[in-house]
Image 1 (spheres, rainbow, N blue to C red):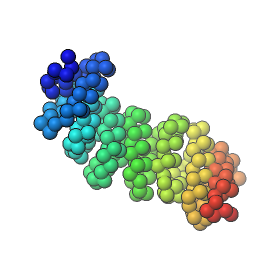
Image 2: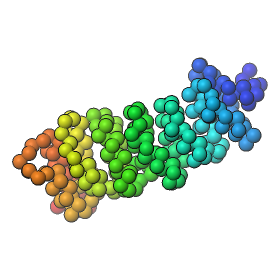
Image 3: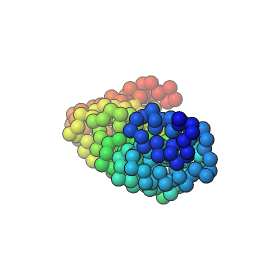
Image 4: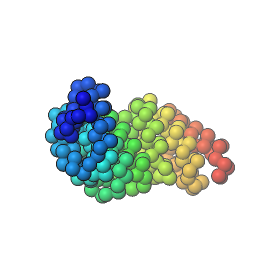
Length: 239
């Protein structure tokens, strides 16, 4: 019976191929979290052969308030895609503003796996701020995954009060070539119009138009449409 198993056996069961066994072991460990179990969970989070076991061990450490920045730094550089993704999810839950951890999170913007980049964008959105490195990381993720509507949505939601600053950075380069830019630029234009000052809206509009207003790139038209839609519905500053 599960209830009669030792802590060591339950932690080992976190790597069981059957999901019910893993979930049951995690539940029993969660119900009886003890500081004496922390070293065992730390060992499992580092050395267990199964990514599932390592991920569950990390979540149990978090539940026991024993997950540290050191743990997260190791996880974010792990060779396992699943573990890196879980590390970002945990960093999102922990919410620490540690500078070293923030740099590691920024580094995940260039991860080779799309799921990790998506998780990175979520964390950056939660952490807020309009620092140059954060906006650069979001730009990098967006350019790599522009045709993914989920990435578009999470980047737009991450901008907060930094939509104009992000636009200025993004529009330093040509955006032609991918259809995804059309939908994204319409959303970005709308957010700028709804959240920024009239001066900032005018500046972003000028950058969207570019040096040659006669150009009819789809993304430019979409950006202008977004700005116009936002201005029309902006109850704070209707113009």
